[in-house]
Structure formats: C-alpha cells, structure tokens
Length: 505
Length: 119
Ligand SMILES: [Fe+2]
Ligand SMILES: [Fe+2]
Ligand SMILES: [Zn+2]
Image 1: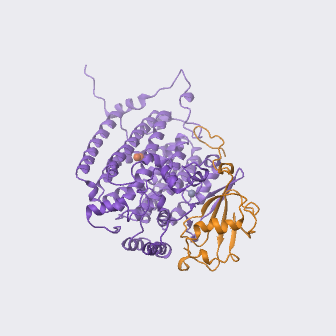
Image 2: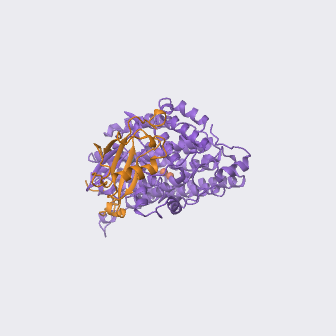
Image 3: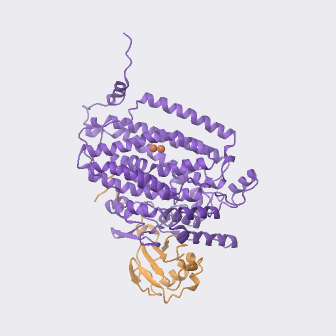
C-alpha cells in the first residue's frame, strides 16, 4: 500500500511534538536543568500553541529560496558597482554602526536561541527556538556578506566582531545581549523576542531598512527584505511566549512584568544609538526618531498592552519618560559622538543647514532651543579651524553603559540626569531611574559590568594613550574622525566629481 | 536579591579601587556647560591636592571652553556626591572626603556657557 500523504496538521504534529518524550533513564529535571530556576511555573507544555506551525522540512525549503534570491541580488550589486549609487558616502556611518553594533547582536541571539532550542522542556517551543537560532545565524551571515562589498571600498568595516567586544560605545549592545544571554531561558526570550523583537523591532528596522531605501543602499534593503519574514515569525513567538507564561500560572505575572519593565528599558536605551543614526547619519531621513516612536511605540505599543491587560500585564515602567525623551535623545547622542569623533569607528559630521532645518521642523519644541546652538557653535569652530575633539573620557552609566548624557527632560532639559546608589561600600552611577532599578534588583550582576572607560584606566585596553586604545580596538587613523577630509570622502569625490561637503537633504 | 542567572555569579566587583593601580576614580561634571556632554572620569591618586585637580586635571579637559579661564574660583559652588561642600584647596582629595567613584559637580556663578545657553 503506498504511503498516504499526511495532512499538514499530522505532519506538523509528528515533526514537532513527536520529537520529544518523557525520559526514564534520567530525570526530566536533569535533562532540562535550566527551565525552572527562574520561578516560572509551567503546568502543561502541551498547551504551547506553535504560532506558525512550520515544519522543519518546510522551513529549510523557504529559507533556501530566500537565500538564493538574496545572493543573486548581492552578486549583481557587486557587478554593477552598487556603492556608487549611494546618496552620499557619509551615509555609510550608519552602515558602520550597523555592522559593528547590530550584526553581532544577531549572532548573540543565535547563541541564545540555540541554548533554548536544547533546554526548553516543551518540544513545540524547542523547535520554534531552533528555527530562530538558525534564522539569527543567517541574519548575521547575510549582513556580513552584503556589507563586505562596502568593505572593499570604504574604511571602518573590517573587523566588527573584534570591535564589538572592545569599543566604548559597542559595549552598549554587547552588554544588552549578554544581560539576556546570562539570564535563564524565560527571561532571555522575554528580553529578545518580546521586549526587543515585538515591542521595539520596528524602531530598529524602519530606520535602517527604509533609511537604506531612501539613500540608494540596495544591498542593505535586500538583506532587510530577506530577514523580514523571519522577523515576523520571531515577533509572533515573542507574543506567544508571553501569553503562554501568563496563562500557565498566575504566579508568573509579577516575574514577567518585572522582566518586561527591565528589558523594555534596556532595549530602549540601546535604541538611543539608533535614534542618533536615524536623525543625523542618514543623508535622507524617512522619518524622525520622534515620529517613529509615536507610531511604533505610543500607538502600536499602546494597543498591544491594551490587549495584554486582560492578563494583568501593564505598560512597562518609565514608558512615559521614554516618550518625553523622544524629543531629546537623538540630539544628545549625536552631540557626544561629534565631540568624541576621534574615537569612533565611523566618521562624524555636523548636521548641514538643510538637516538642521529638517530637525527644527521635526522637533519644534526642542531642537532650536536646546540643540541647534551647540551644532552652530561647532560649525563656527570648524570654519575658524579651532574645533577640537574633547580630551577626557566620559562617565558611563553602570547598566546601559552609555555616557551619562541624558537629561532631566521633564523638569530641566539642560540638567544631566544623575542617579547613584551604594553597594558593598562602592558607589554606582546611573543615567536614569530605569537603569538604577535594574541594578538594585540584581546588584551582583551589574557590579561585574565591563565599563570601557574604567577598563582603559585599569590598563586593560592596549595602553594609556588614545592611539594605543584605538589600535587595540583595531581602528585605523583612516576609520576615525571627521567625514570631511577622510579617505572615504576623497574616494567619493573621485567617483562623483563633486560633494565637497556632506550632503544632506 | 540574588542574581537569577544561568551559571551563577562569582563574587566579582570589576571596579574595585584596588584595580586602579593606586588611583581612585573621580567624576567631575560642570553644570550648565553641556558642550561637555557628560561628566568626565579621571583616575587620580587620593593624595592629590584638590588644587591640582582644579588647575591641572580639570583644566586638561574643560579649558577648551572659553568660560574656563573666566572662572572666579572663590565663587565656585561645589557638590560632592549630592551634598554641597567647600573643598580645602591645599588638602588632598581623600582629606576632602572624595572617595572612589565620587561625583563632583561644580557651578560657576555668572558663567552660563556659550551665549548664556548653558552650553
Ligand atoms: Fe535577526
Ligand atoms: Fe529576530
Ligand atoms: Zn543607563
């Protein structure tokens, strides 16, 4: 009798739930040692609803198709010298930040999901995590392959993974990933799949991907497109895991709420780098950080939490502050990058007249009053030849590791927000109540933070002088500093025969 | 509350004062001068006189601001770890109660930054 073709439901059952069993030689708790110490109570893993019902064989087929298309585009991009179609070579600072700051997070996500794909007790959840582990590895790999084309022509793209582990501003994404990776599996997935991928993902993807589309960067658009259907699967997983935990046991709610509060704030702080990228590095900006925040967090996020309120889950703590800060953070972060541009692996440049007009329009309540004057002052200094990068090293927040540049936006936007606590006889400083709360809940975790400024002073970063530290970062003198006058700029001028200034629309 | 993390956390305080080779960390922030986007971090010997902190260490960074030369130090207002204080200029950091990772903030009355804009 010929084998009967199984229907989708049966196949799905066999290829996921059929993969697990109740162990007898070893205790289940020994086989799955990581899924209970966080305090999350799961009474019935079979209640796990696989959000996308994808079997492994179908998964491989879809992914192979996507890869084939992507690599065809990458090839033709290279053959047609796609890099010459960029809006301006200054735009590549965004791509340099992406490959050094975001691509390694993809790899960290891969590691985390690979762990979950082994250690969740429920087979349905395990399979979903295995797929995501492969997705994230694919994202990392395709980003490296795509962007390697730019590496042939421009500086600052040569060693992202080395830099991720060392560079002062890259400790922000690194510590974010490692905070999640060192947590238990439920906290990890709440952080990455829910807080990051569900609640905040559009705030990362829109600026980079539509930013790429607006600036002639077809390479980035293509891998973004290729990752998009994976990401929608990841978002669904994020939502499912939250609902699953909340439905399984009422004791899970306070734990999930605390993780939500924590990882919302962690991810939001990380996105401050994206905000600066979006408002300042892009030659043409599709939308401002504030507009994106209003649409993707205030509106869409608000609706999501409205929906989740039936489980008792509330909006993440300090979300009101994040909304108030939307008028400020991109300007604050770009200011600190511009003043320390001799130590950034991408080129910095001051906003042009056109860009400042755009910023005034997008930030009517803050840009002209608080931020335009500093950029105009630095412009004048550059004209006079008196501009100098700042000489010292900034104080960093113990948790988010961003220089302490954030201000009291609700009371006095020109006053830096300082928070401090004591632990074990030492002082710890924070940029915000959000970061302070995170520390105070698990101080033993964050007293171990590898703060780049402190590490330099402890003598662990190649030497005491800036050139030594930069060499240890593998930043060459050509990678750093102002865009105007850089090799990238010179090369761009050779190709285009123009663009003596930064181009910004 | 203890850490809830995968492999347990050993007792490691990465920024103990012993790790700074005889120095301690001191942060200095100049209020109303946001051209310096953040307070500055310095590794300093605890025996350093406060005067040296002002005229050498702080000057090494803040002197790039046109206000720095105009400061009347008699009138400067100091805040150490959240409390206002009057430093003894000849005494050491330690004698002034400045510990490892202390934050010193100072205001310079009459000097409100570039064009009075607190920059
Ligand atoms: Fe990804
Ligand atoms: Fe993802
Ligand atoms: Zn922080």
